[in-house]
Length: 220
Ligand code: E4P
Image (cartoon, rainbow, N blue to C red; front, side, top):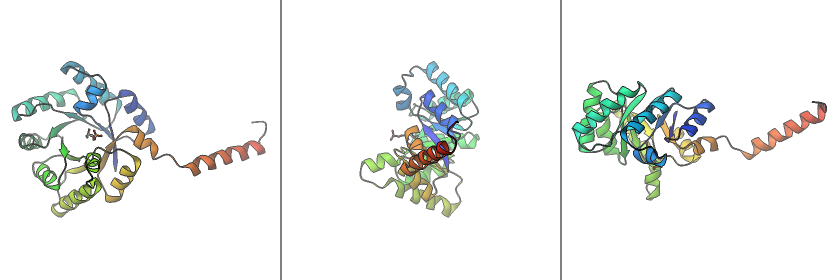
């Protein structure tokens, strides 16, 4: 399973990259705003800064809601760097944009997926990734992981190449559940990735190893 970090915070992206397990980045307009990145030129520069840190795909979201605008923005975004994947919302115009970009060989990420039907449409339109938001489904008492499983089954039935990118991951159990059901990618915060590291028995065990070593080697 690929690990993407879901942030526009450069320090967190650097930290995840340094860990050595990062495969890409997803951003969205809310995450950009959270970092105080406003204005088209600053936003474009920020995407470039992200691309300079990571080795994998970087999803950059269009803000237009009409087809012509999505195409214009997407074409500008892919000029920034080869790592850019055009992130397009699941709307009627968005499906048309996915089809347009897949015909041109441009990688896309269809965002705001909340149902299997939406994921099926996005795959038929040639999306590279679909992003079902599992955390936001869980927030309204709907099983986000069950949706990932359902989409994976549908894609397997017909051999779609579209990758299932589990988004809106909030905590380490989401990551483990995504891995159990076979999501292709998960995108979440650095805190959820780092939480995978933790186990109290690891800490206790390490402390014991180090204190035993010290007893045997008092002068080191
Ligand atoms: C996906 O690409 C989105 O950026 C993201 O995962 C949304 O997560 P949230 O529900 O925590 O805002």
